[in-house]
Amino acid sequence: MTSSSNNSVDLKVRGLKKSYDGNLVLKGIDFVAEAHTIFVIMGPSGSGKSVLLRHLIGLEVPDSGEVLMNDASIHDPATREKLELAIVFQSGGLLNSLSVGENVGLYLKETKCMRDTDIDPIVNNSLEKVGLSVDIDKHKMPSALSGGMKKRVAIARALAINPQMIFYDEPTSELDPLSAVTIGKEIQHLNQEYGTTSIVVTHDRDLAFGIGHKIAFMKNGVLTEPRSPEEITQHSDEETIRFLNAGSIQDYQNKTQ
Ligand code: ADP
Ligand code: MG
Image (cartoon, rainbow, N blue to C red; front, side, top):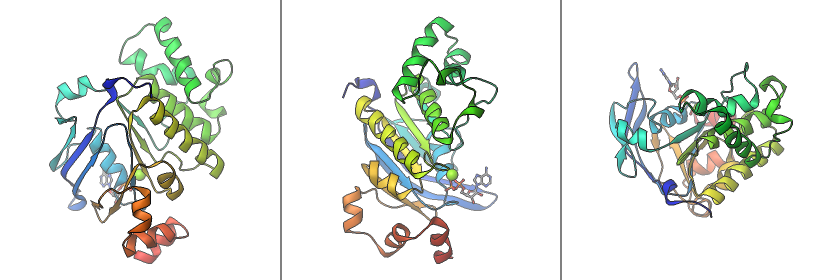
């Protein structure tokens, strides 16, 4: 691992609660994701995974509870200033009017006010890390990319800010199985190479069990105790087994209604 100590960041979540219009979505979430690990949050669609993720990165304020990174609150502006967090959005979140290269460098240009000559090598390096070419792919517009390539660009954009923690929201959704495996390997490779603590929210069982060091399940607004894939396979409760064995997420939802 070539990581420096600056990405040795852990995440602690305590008693997180959030409701919208009287509908309690997060009912008290507690967990710890250790530094350098890939922590997977699994759950069917509508279970509150994206809501949880928005709280983890400080985009939303909880009704109660706290989110701590290296024991500092994510809602403290000093913490936000010290730590670079990157999120790979479910949709990719690319701007269609900008080229791949411009998308990847946007944060450095707009937020960090860096010069183009300084941004360019970082963009090139980030694209290469996710297997995209500087000669060709960099100059394409997002509309010319496959779903898998768009996700790679979104990951490259996250890497460009040299994050200390990286959050992925459904990184394999809308991808064909082969591209999903490739993206999973990419997430794993980046974690191994840089040791960046990674939080992955997904309903993709293969991804979760393929790359997760710890996996926790969202169930009715609470998170189960995080376990390794081996532990889950050996000691699962009935509902988890049903979730894991369901033919599809839709299938699972029908069965639990
Ligand atoms: P998931 O990501 O697991 O598919 P979400 O976290 O997007 O699910 O949503 C969980 C629940 O919270 C849903 O019932 C959704 O309608 C509700 N919800 C999410 N965001 C808001 C919001 N801003 N206002 C009201 N309800 C919301
Ligand atoms: Mg979601």
